[in-house]
Every structure is written in C-alpha cells, then in structure tokens.
View 1 (cartoon, rainbow, N blue to C red):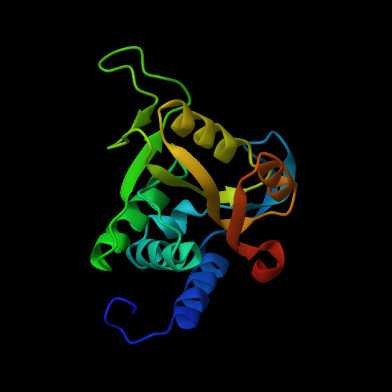
View 2: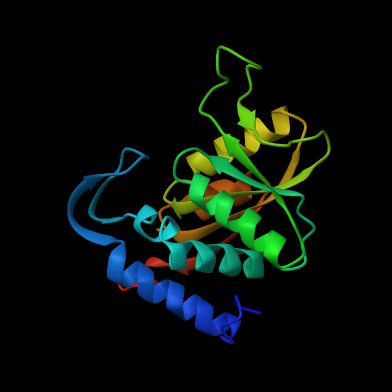
Length: 188
C-alpha cells in the first residue's frame, strides 16, 4: 500500500508530517498570498518537490480522497503544480489513474488561449488541490476556472489548513473541503 515499503497509511501520514515540521516551517515576518501577515511561513515546496515528500503527498492526498470518483486533480500554478503531479503519478502507480490539470491565473494570450492546461474534457470530475490554505481564494479561483472550462468540482483537498477562513469560504460555495493537517498538527 505504500510504495513497497510496507508502511501503513498512518505511517505515511506521520512521515509526511515529520518532513513538513523538519523542512517547511520558517519563523519571521511574512506576507502570505492572501495579503495577510504571519510570524511563520510554511514553505511546502521544500517538501512537495523532494522525492520522498512528493510520493507521500500524492499517497496521503489520494487516501484522503478515498473512493470519490475523480477523473483529474488540478490547482493554481505554482504551489499546486507539484501536488497535482504527485497525485497523478501515485494514482497511476496504484492503478486508479487521475489526470493532472494546471490552472493559470488567466488564459494565456497565445496558442490555444487556455487557462486550464491538461487533458480536461467536458464533464470530467476534478478535485482541486493546493498545498497551504489561508483564505481559500486560490482554490476557489481554480475551481471556477475548471468549471468554466467544462469540468465539475465537488471537492477541494490540501496539505495544510492555516485555520484562517478557508474552510468557511470553500464550504460556503458548496464544496467539500479536507486537509491533511492543521497548524495544531504542525505545532505552530
């Protein structure tokens, strides 16, 4: 169930949590993408772009997704890119392949003029993913773009919920929201 290493899902989640605590938490004065200020920053790309972290993110988010019938996972570029890729790769290895979708902030002005890149087809069921959630704005923007391009979105998943309003904003739009960890789990 875990890349041939014999670990349980619980063990994989604990390994991911340990990586995040060790590698991703920075203290200082930071401005978040939401515009809010924070005394710590969770730089999950240091985990999602590592070999072990990528596998663990893909595996743990697929486990969190459960049996929900997703055709694709997508999110806003840049933070969601490694999360999307990890989920697509691990889903293939587990025999339940889901496609990856990358959502741009706006449609590109050349080529095919797409805002959503990847094999999106009308009616595809997509789960929106992101690494860290503060207000939920990026995930909601990704969901709107995927829906405008013909996909359907019912669920939004992530790695860390900062507990600053994302859940309420996402659920107010009718989506189911789940994250692997909260700030309490990270000890910040």
